Length: 569
Ligand code: ATP
Ligand code: MG
Image (cartoon, rainbow, N blue to C red; front, side, top):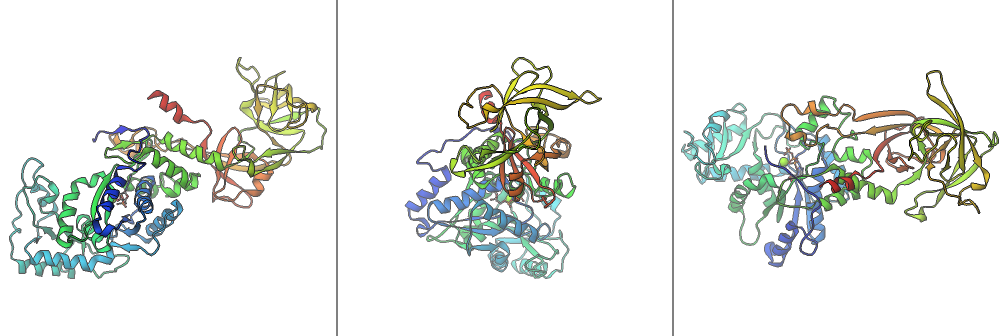
């Protein structure tokens, strides 16, 4: 298992540029590639994008933006067995959501199948590739180890004519999948394992969603990626660290095509890994297919559509990526830091409203029956230009159950018998009693209000220690709230032995019905809107909402656990 370190926030060195951008800047200053910058984001359409991809997208599109270059979107659709248009569409939607645009630079690796095929033919004719009829097990056995050289295939020196004939017949569909491959003839003793006659083409008979059954041979990643970069005019091919050992092969193939005036270059940075999360597309697919989550956009998923549904914003994701930075070392990043970025962003934008998630009734016994006063509530104290809205106050109110205690400990500043609190934006009240039901639970709480203490009125500035949020009973709207916890119960699920599905947190979703929401919020809420429920956290309207029932996802609580984590480190 590879060693993982937990990183904190990374300082940008050199003029606010990360190390990749510094390399780009140098290349541009040296006039490489005619002073051109062209990056690309190359997703394989075999799953939905996750927050790790966002880190790559921000690098690819962001660096192009920074230096006045361009960024292509290129689908790496070289394996028809796993790919689908559903994924293509979701990927485009998510990139746009992050705020990036490939304009007219949308490409597919499958566009280059004819050129790649011709290139393979050329290598065969030059004696640089051969058809191997061994099984994949035999080929693997001959690979050797990093310290021991491999063994040559018995087919390595077959005549060029025979190779040409077989490769063409492979593509005509004359042979079964797995019966033959085309390998580059490089060096079975090379210290870089990727140079030990890598497989460059394999037979796949599944039709391709773009090219149908035109092709029966498909290029491997290492044979497709660099060449596609070259065909497209990409100058900087930025990817993650696991491709470091592939770089010499990237350069080997590209050199066969490039000249002095233009040659693409690969640069690698560290992947984003998050605590309590898995980032492998294969595992995420498994969670979806086996119904362990409610789909790719389940708000517990690290997918971009899941995060969006949860209420995370593009600016929060960008802020987080900026804080973790780009380095050359593998890292495991704290999910609390991402949450910190989300909280900071929503604090600036989310409308403050009142909701009671765990309601108990409070009766103001000296307040006239049938009377309603409209209280003014600030929409966002962080941004007074957002204005105010009105919230009705009446004799019967909902408050949170845990804001009342019959026998409170010393430092309990909320409501208890004979104690005073302020009802936010309204009056100071004093608890005068309560009623229990037959099973001993508090059913109703009684209080008297002090009419001289209405918020904002002259002489209302008497101070009490606690302030409670509340919602007026007659006008409260019942809504559903979905509370989320970590999807996995361990910090680094990928580092654990055994089945990752056994590590799922079974209490990661709690559905609360009958949450009381103030009417102004209920009238105005549309899917995707962000709110702060006073004293509780940030909540985002879910697309499952109907005209009859609003559904909210709890995006994140108010308490910043990142600050606490940082103290521990
Ligand atoms: P796989 O290759 O297993 O299907 P992948 O996550 O690498 O999965 P790609 O579609 O190949 O998926 O990824 C597209 C780009 O996103 C690549 O350049 C890859 O390096 C980058 N990327 C993928 N995962 C992360 C991550 N966790 N952090 C940063 N970049 C990532
Ligand atoms: Mg990949």
